[in-house]
Image (cartoon, rainbow, N blue to C red; front, top):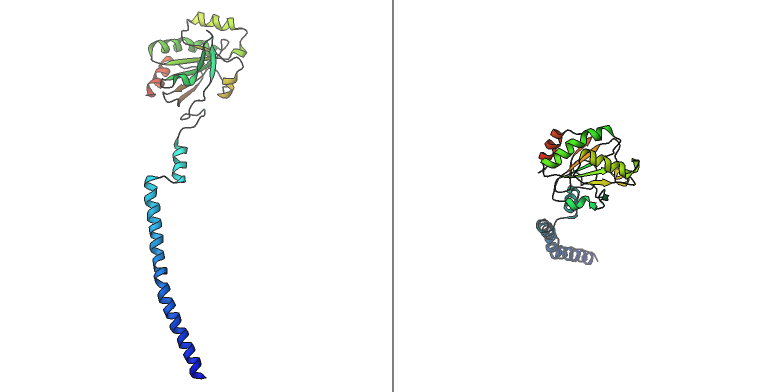
Length: 203
């Protein structure tokens, strides 16, 4: 009886040893497989960016906003002459967007410098009049005639663009580079010299 028990135990031990020996190569192959997967994923990264990389690339792009470095919000308005103008029409050029009104003393003081700037530099000036605050369109036309303004006067009849741009004091100006990105903001009247200085920074 004892011999039978010992024989069963020995057979069990031999069987386990054989099983362990047969099973071992599969286990040892597992790390190699994992390494191959890791290697494959590393190599794959070089040709196809991960989701995290794509996310980082997206966040690096400028966003539409009102801060320096943001893409200036697009808008569409009619000029005093009746032409429809969009900011995005001037992509590829340097643009000065100016918010003003005829009743604003700093605006009146700034206007001759803006006209000089427009005549002397390769700049697009879009002067957005807060038309809802004016007594009449004729008042705007009289102002243009008085100051001999030759750049486009845009009519913000419902103050929608001024609201979108968060305009409080006027005049307020935005210097926008050829890529449509805001490079400078001015609250209050700018001198001709300051206009030129900021213009030259936008390459």
